[in-house]
Every structure is written in C-alpha cells, then in structure tokens.
Amino acid sequence: MKAFKSSKKTDINPHSERDAAETVQTDFSRLIERRDFLAGASALGLAGLLAGLGAPGLAAGQGRTGSRGGALSELFRPVSANTRDTVTVPRGYDWEVLVRWGDPLWSDAAQFDPRAGLPDAEAQLRCFGDQCDGMKLFSGAGGEVVLAINHEFYHPAGVYAATGGEPGSGADIRRGMLAMGVSVVEIARRGRSWRVVPDSRHSRRITPETPMDISGPLRGHALLRTEADPEGARSLGTVNNCGSGRTPWGTYLTCEENFDGFFSESASGRLTPEQLRYGAGANDWGFRWARIDERFDVDRHPNEANRLGYVVEIDPLDADSVPRKLTALGRLKHENAEVVIARNGRLVAYMGDDERGEYLYRYVSDGVYDPGAGAANRALLDAGALYAAKFSDDGSGEWLALTPETTGMDRAALCVHTRLGASKVSATTMDRPEWVAAHPDGDQVLCCLTNNKNRGRSDKRNRGGDAMPVNGPNPRTENHYGQIVRWRPAGGDHTAPGFAWDLFAVAGNPEVHWDDYAGSEHITGRNMFNSPDGLAFDRQGRLWIGTDGATSDEGDFKGMGNNQVLVGDVRTGEIQRFLTGPKGAEITGMEWSPDGRTMFIGIQHPEGRFPDGRGSIPRSSVISVWRKDGGVIG
Ligand code: FEO
Ligand code: CA
Ligand code: CA
Ligand code: CA
Image (cartoon, rainbow, N blue to C red; front, top):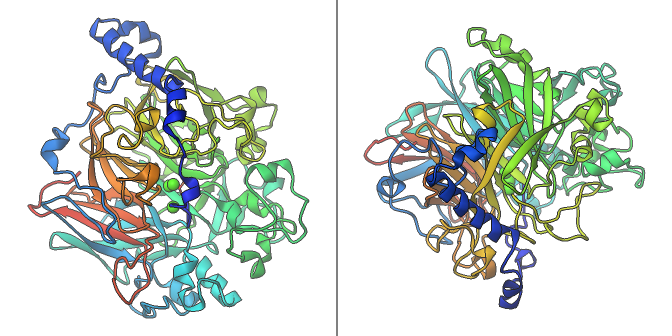
C-alpha cells in the first residue's frame, strides 16, 4: 500500500549531472558488466563454471525457457505513456469495468450514491469493497467462475466524500472498516466480456470482523491469546489485504500487509522492540479504529496485533467456510504468496515483506503434496520451515534457515516475530519486496523491488531494522525507480539451499539520466516506468508487470505518465507497455479467464473521476480487457 503520496515533489530523486558524474562506476555498473561477462562465458561454453549452483547462465536471453507466445512486438503495438484520466489499451483491444467499489453483490443492496458513496456499514457489507488489490480466479464443479479479490484499505476521500474526507461518526468508521477485506464474486460471460452474477451462492464479503481460525504453530500460543479469545484459537477478521496466492487444491490466499496502520496507543511510550519493529506507534494512519473497537488500542490489547500480519487461506467455493490464519508462514507485512510444488513434492511459498530494508522469504512444507488428496493437503501450510534470502554480489544466493539454532529464538517466536529472526541470520535487506512470480516451467522466480528512497543512507533504517547499504540486488542509493530481481533455484529445485540471481530489469529514466538511474539495457524512452509492484506470469510464460509509482510526469518521472501494465519476455529481456491506468491510480491484481481470452486488472485509488466521469467520486475498479478479434490475451 502506498496511499495518498505517490507524486509528492519531495519524493523525487534530486540527482544532478554533477552527482551523476561522481557515481559513474557503481555496483550496478559492475553488475551490468558482469552480466555481459556471463553472456560471453555462456557463449564460450563456460556456463559449467556455475554448475555447482545449477545456473545455466544469468544473462537475459540465456535462460532455458521463456515466453512461448512469440515476440512481444508481434503481439500488440505498445501504448504511449500519458496522463489521461482513463484506461488506455493497445489498438485491437478493448476494456470495460467489471466491478467497482459499492457495486451490489446481492440485489437487495442499497444504491450507491455517485457523490456520497454508500449510506452505512450494512450497505457496505452487501457491496464490493474499496481499493481492490490481489485477485485469483477459481472454477466451481458446476462450471461457475468465481473471482476472489482483496480490498487493501479504503480511501477516506472517497468513503467519506460526504463529510469532507473525514469520518463524521463511529458509524462512519465502521462503514470504512467494512470496505476492507475480501470479496468473492461469481462472474459470467457477456459477449466478449464478463458481468457479476448477483445473489450467487458464492457471493461473500470477508471483513475485519469475520471470524477466522488461527492455524499452525501459533494456535493457542500465549502471544496470541486475548481477553476475547483466551484460547488463542479464533481471531476476528483480516486487514490490509494486499497481494494474493492460490493453492494447488483450489483455495485463495490473502496476504495481510500494513496491519500496524490500524492500531494506536491510549498511553504512549510502552511499546516493546518487537512491536516497534512491526511499525506500532502512538497513532494509527488516520483510520481511528480504536475509537469504535478497543482491540485496536495496542496498550490495552497488546496481543491483538500478533493476530494480524499473516497469509490467510479462504475456500472461495464454500461461502460458509471459516478462513484460516497460516501462522507457519510467518508474520510479516505480507505482499503476496507465490506457491509452487517443488520437484520433490514439497510445497514452497515465496513471500515478500514490503517495507524498506525488509526481507524476501521462503516457506518449505515438511510434508509432500498429494495430487489426489484435495483439501487434505491443507496441512502442508501448517508445518514447515522458514528461510530468508541472502544475495551475494557474485550472483549467487542462499536461503538462510530461521531456526532456534540459527537465531536463538524458539519456533513460535520465529513465526510471530519473523522479521527479528531474519535480522539475526543477516539476510539481505531489500528495496521493498512486492509481488513474487514463478515461471510456469519452474526454472526461475522474480520479485518486484518497488523502490527505496533510504537505500544507501546510513542515517535511515526501518525502526529496529538493519542498515541498508547498497548491495547486489539493490544497487542504487536513493532508489526511486525500483528493479525486478530474478533467481534460479539450484538444479531447478525450489527447496535447494542455493540459487543464482540477476536483475531482470532495473527501472529508470533514460530521458533524464545517463547514469545508473537511466535503467538497464532494455529500458528505453518508449517503455520506461517506475516502481514495479504487481507481477504475474500468464500461461504462455510472459511476465506481466503492474506499477505503483510516482505519476507526476515531472522531474525524474518526466515522460512516464500514469501507472501502467507492461509485458516482459524473460527470454530476451524485452519489455513493452500494454496498458496505462487513470490519474493517480495504482495497478494491482492481474488475472486471466479460464480460456485466456479476458484479462482482469485492478485499478486502485484513482484520484480523478474514474470510472464514472463527471458528477461521480472516483471508485477503485476491476476491469476486463480483451482482444477485439476474440483471441487469447494471456
Ligand atoms: Fe500492498 Fe506492498 O503493496
Ligand atoms: Ca496499494
Ligand atoms: Ca503492492
Ligand atoms: Ca506498492
């Protein structure tokens, strides 16, 4: 989440030409040289030098696999950067809104007022939530198509439009609260596009008040017990639902990110180092939940925040099912959870912790996936090992096990204070790990490192966190553009301790900079972008990138326009701009229909009049995009 502050001038990186001249030979330059070396080494048959890591060579273009759908340039004509207050797609494509904040999921829901939103909390409970983010699509036994969609937070300017952007009462606060969580909606084809099916037996709103089971090692643990739940077994609700994931047995994973933003202190100054490391402070981020529900007062109920910050499993095809908080996967500011089944059958989840200088994680199940066992495989998410990534500057990397032996923390403490464990093993501080995506062929995994204005600044670090010197995968000081790191598991084994890594793309602006801030070799004036965030492979093995960056179109960001969707070819390194979003909006979830002929894309926190135009407040929306010739899009 990066609400309300995307284009502030103060966020702009003030690199002058003089600064650039002084930083001409940085670690990043050396990495590019190294990549050239590896390309040459591979051509000379020297790739075997890397065989110990199972790395076939790291250069873009040297991978064993890539996209299977032909060259990007033959697929669509790129869209130009722009600052229009609408969605722009390539010639030959079309789009429409599938569902917006406030659209009814049941036909008895209250009407949305285009100037004032929804009247009350009960109305919001019957309607699609705000700030749509990660989403996944599921197919039911009867052929029905169901989308599960996260609602990361709510935008006061929209939800409280009628009261000047501020909650006017406790009832208003609860109405906002219930705009968060998850929506489950059934959708059906309508011509080339899709519509929401109201009153579906699958329709569901999951909110910060929905009962959830605490599952895994922390179930019943003292750190999770509260006055309202002395057993530490059942918590209320999920918050700040950011990226998502899907299990092979057809359940949805929703990831709790900035949960600290909803807590405040009634008596300041009592916070422990553990609480501080997870962002607790005297004040919340303006949501004021503690006024209507004292469990969000961190002084009165200090364990309540220990019940948030997890990956949560939801069965999207059973509206009566109880969601499960998966404590074995650790407590972070979770971005998404990319699940793969390793060759040896173990379930692996790759997970980013999106805060400056935090870490990239891997979970490996103790048990082995049984394709015939269906939901019985759920136990794989309750017992396993956690690792944090260490990237070495020579292009190798290692998953560092978080165990009592390596950290001095017991297993429960490692699940609830996972960040502290990663610090103990000296994992690599990252430039805000956002979505992770694994190639469908299993040979490579990528993660968006969105930006980090504090990288390389010795005076700045996350509270209680570690120093953030420039390092291999995070090669630039005051990194306002971001990069996408890629790793190849040793021997193609996602459970292996080692990997080889490179930077798939380093974002930058070659129109403004000629140094490292111009970006890597495939970044040009025609495809430049900043702050990669969403990341997903389609079935053809093409990499789709959504951005959440500065949209000022000025200074360092001149010519980049609004946030956008790009498509990358992991074989060639080529990147093309596919879509641009409306003013101020971030691009969030990306998903495809079962036939691959429709793509669903999240448009979060638009700031103009999207999508309803004049006379309406802006509304976060999921849009459908399709080819006019009916062809496959991804
Ligand atoms: Fe919710 Fe890190 O984006
Ligand atoms: Ca966001
Ligand atoms: Ca994100
Ligand atoms: Ca982001």
